[in-house]
Picture 1 (cartoon, rainbow, N blue to C red):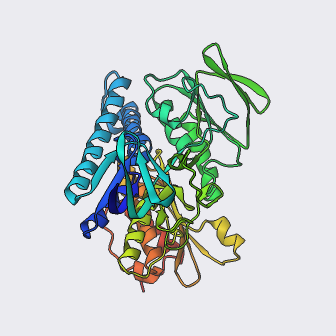
Picture 2: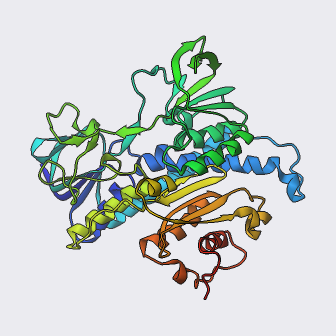
Picture 3: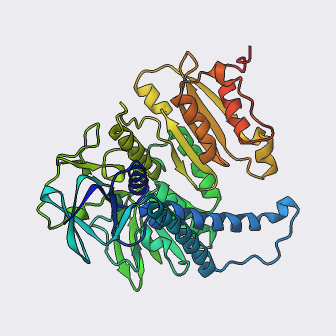
Length: 455
């Protein structure tokens, strides 16, 4: 039996940074990934391939409106196979980078499906010898939620995995779920000529987003060609002559494909048929402030535990756990985890929404700025959008909501301002270069207090 100081199960955005960090501190570390595809869901089936497809879709979108820039694009066309090849090339390059990083850091890598047995024994398919360690960290991630009520024929009824690897553009697509996955992939297929219908059972798209912003975005996406039905249910789904028949709000409709985008669930496969018992809570592995599970010496981070199912949250968990092990007195705080949607326009938010502040009885001031008044946005032809900032009476930033160009980058200003307690008066002394999109954030901050914050 091979013995290590630390074994990390899962090579995603939580697992591999933790393995590298601990190996560099002198620990004997092993990492196990089930499919020789380091990077986890984010790199292989989520964040990166989705953004690659979105980049191609946005490029096509730009070509369609090239005349507004005084340009001629000629005959506009696309090659879906080449779009997919570009995506795969990017994923492979990034995956190889992770492999080199692990090897350079001295981490021992095992490829294969790992199961955790009692007494911290690990068995890997295809590896004869058992492994064990002083500490084991479960970075097992999540998988698409596809409840049994939905048909299981993945040639018609897709999860995000099948959608990302589609070999052709379907004529029509029903997206069940108006969250991040549904909107991003829905926009990709829509841009490439597919008729997309998104059905969200909640009253708004992107549940969790500031309600007023969600309402404002609905006509923006509809104008782009997406049919979006909120507050509606898909009441029936079944195959029909190679297509799908759906009953939506009592009406029967037919689609070429269906994308089931109702969320994700924790991947519990690591304990399948092992006799292992680990405490869970609402489907998540239960941990304390030190990320310890109910099993001595076994920890869990990332999507496997409570909190936002986001890649950057998993990396944050990894760094927080490493800091705890180094003796630092730190605990996880998820109150300022930014959320990003990489559609165009992009959408980002961090901190409290107006609904949350009202529910908590907190008085607040609101700042707003429009990208239509921002020179950089105007010159780029991306003038749609708004930045909304929410402050307490002392000028402390409580929440930021952005929709518009580069929202996923601009949100860092709001995150840092809240994280480090920079009040509106101190922030006003920071010089923003001109012309930049970030000036719109500055203007939103200043508008909250009537613009008189320079004195």
